[in-house]
Length: 218
Ligand SMILES: C[S@@+](CC[C@H](N)C(=O)[O-])C[C@H]1O[C@@H](n2cnc3c(N)ncnc32)[C@H](O)[C@@H]1O
Image (cartoon, rainbow, N blue to C red; front, top):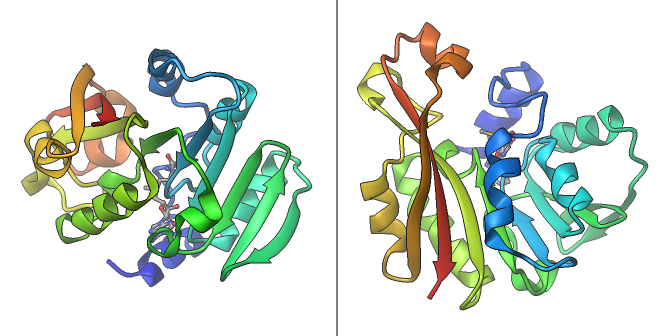
């Protein structure tokens, strides 16, 4: 899955993954991380998610990373933000109060841009990547994170035979394989949410569990 795939999705408005509201699992479960005010939260593959603004409203510094300039500009327009925009190390950085969005390839990001990170919020990121890219994603997170950092990850578990990804099904066994040798991993919630995923319903996916994991870097 190359970068053109995602640029095309944004150009053709094939963005069924985008929610018009803040994700209810973010509001419900992110407080369990007990982060102090001012903590820095990295949001990889952020799209134009309203979750970015909710995190800012909780008093966190937020760093989003998104490939599509169209997505970032829509985010700014739709939320009436007038960010400062500057070129930083090959990225276009949109800065607005406590929020920075790096427009460019997440796999090219380094600590030089993010600085110290305290937590990661992953919704629609790991599940957007095909299996062969997941190890690169995890390798990249390992470079950016330190012992004690936490992560809230929302994943999907469904029968991939019923519909090709994205989104991809990343069940607990796959998460354990990717993370267990460097993180503690706790499933904190699992809920059947097929009724909220029309595209999967239309593809006749029979069952979908949306699962919330809390990870801590050991
Ligand atoms: C499934 S969407 C999820 C967006 C967002 N997390 C949400 O919850 O709405 C995946 C997003 O990742 C972006 N993306 C894909 N590959 C990327 C990469 N290598 N670097 C940065 N963003 C990427 C896509 O443009 C798309 O907006």
